[in-house]
Length: 115
Length: 115
Image (tube, rainbow over all chains, first blue to last red; front, top):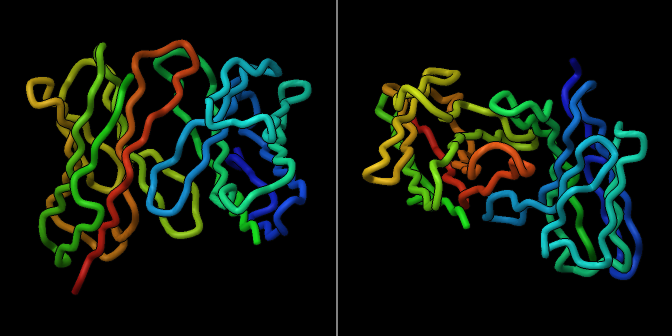
């Protein structure tokens, strides 16, 4: 068990560029979550997957954001036409998806800076 | 909708002193409550959780929390602070299991431990 892995750890981009982040969950974890954390705030839910199906999206997830989880393994989060307000830490978490045992384990996050 | 309020964005204690981090929740149904800790440049790590049963729950690193329904509180305590406890602490709530189990976090409390 190597934990939840996120890449890259840091991303600096210019406004208007597209960026993509990757999350590798703990193996055999069925659920995968994306959260966003801005400075001085707690993480906020963006979306989650049950296997390859995206089951819920927050209204925070504008149409510039898209997430995928092909084959129910790793997930990618893409932001198109980045804006300075997108600067944040993007956290990924995974869980077994088994009721009371459904504890979410977090990765170290990808810190995005939009210049 | 559920919510969490953490009183005190910054708490400072002396090494060896009692740690008390406050968390109040709002939920329309019996909540499931969590405390996570975040060290610099690392992901969130689960300290402890309350689901059902005993209202005093013990977690890792000597922390414990008590669920008080009448006060809608879930305060985190540790009898004796250690320098290694310096980190940011987040209280979070889920409104029951199922339906994604997305976490709603408080804004966090930064704990500083002084010699």
